[in-house]
Length: 286
Image 1: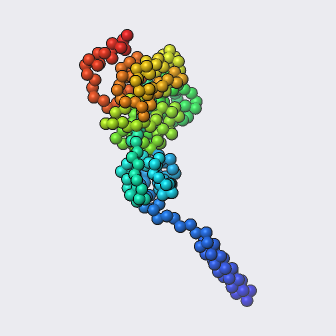
Image 2 (image 1 turned 45 degrees about the vertical axis):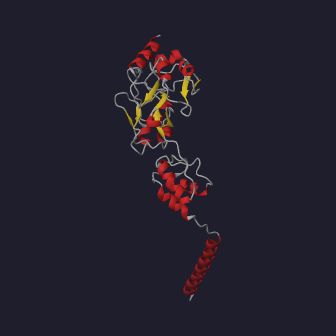
Image 3 (image 1 turned 120 degrees about the horizontal axis):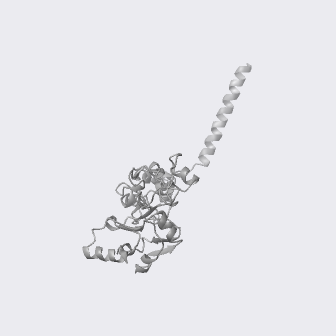
């Protein structure tokens, strides 16, 4: 009889507990907006975090709860994906600015000679914490591939000849994973520009001109020539380093011509005219 009573008691306790759990679950139930699932299904599913939220689910939740899609962008899906999201939510799609990762280091082996040999873990984070690098420039690319491992789109690789990271702009989704992975902070997201044309200072060396130039022949020396040449106030000089604001730059390329070290790069532009080239060489040799 004791066993029977025990079984009945346990059964009664279980039944009462089930009723209590059911009542509590119904009282505190939170119904998820079905639009969140619909928006999540419209996203690429990369879960890269480039949107600033923890994965596609977090971004979908933010889109549904926001009063406007202004400031919300899926870098992987781009404008096409955001248009689908806007249609689901019955809101106006906000055109996003296309961005692409750029590596701000132009210290190839021929201009940035190595002064020592690193014999440790092939990891940029570890190497950066231990010392400045194998060359005299402590700001440049270490070339051990933390950015490569962070990229899930196969959009960045280490050039075996220059030992510098290079971005494949056709594959880059501007998720920002490589930017976060680089301990030297030489990778940044910039406007892709019309016809993928961009101008930027490919250097982050903040040493004074003479020291920077000695470490790397392509280093920015903070001479201000580019700043004086720019008619759009797109270039600023801080900590001995020039920086081009891509929201103000009009891609005139005049700053490129006057840079004495070639630290300002111009990408995807048509070849310069012969007279323009000769003029640039004259300015550089002056």
